[in-house]
Image 1 (cartoon, rainbow, N blue to C red):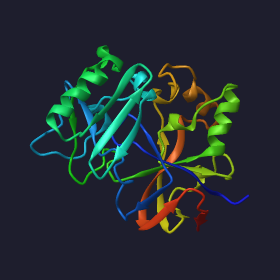
Image 2: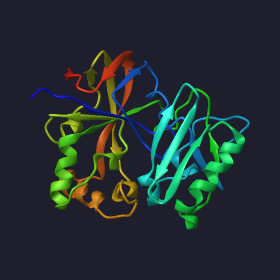
Image 3: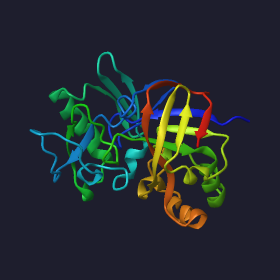
Image 4: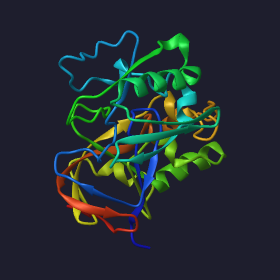
Length: 253
């Protein structure tokens, strides 16, 4: 079967929920629209609200230290700039992340599912025009579904590919073929992406997307399978274009 784009995901608030898409326009030099647009600064974060800019992930609340966050899902209304958050242990909440009152409501909503021993959530923040990806450049993350399946088989348990918090999930490629793509380009739909580096994984991936409980040694599995805790690759958009689920994936030499 032809390699193709199976799923598209965005994560509007870094580490706090995911949303499935069927179509997206990727723009050269940009992250996926509304992906990691906001982040949750913790109480000791050095994020500068007067001069906002990209900051590394340790300035924010993350699934790695608060696994229950893994079970958040979201629905976005970009026209009204509103996000509805859902979690199995919390009532649904709809907010405008840039509204101060809504920001306070969000902090109250997320507090019970945030690990208080690892710094409390303090503020919703963003830097206009900048995505708070885990890379210092505007990246799009790609996951090979067959690589994911190899991890699940190794562990002998069913795993959701959303554990990896990727943007684009690719189907019908050899397992771990993406590890040979560094420096190459991929054409997906009408867009082209340049593969920059492998994604080094943390404890976030050990948590279930359904329950938010740690239940799988994903890091141990990756080290056994490929010799490093790496899954997926980061890419940058080098040619603007539309993507739709089902679009063919072509590795360009």
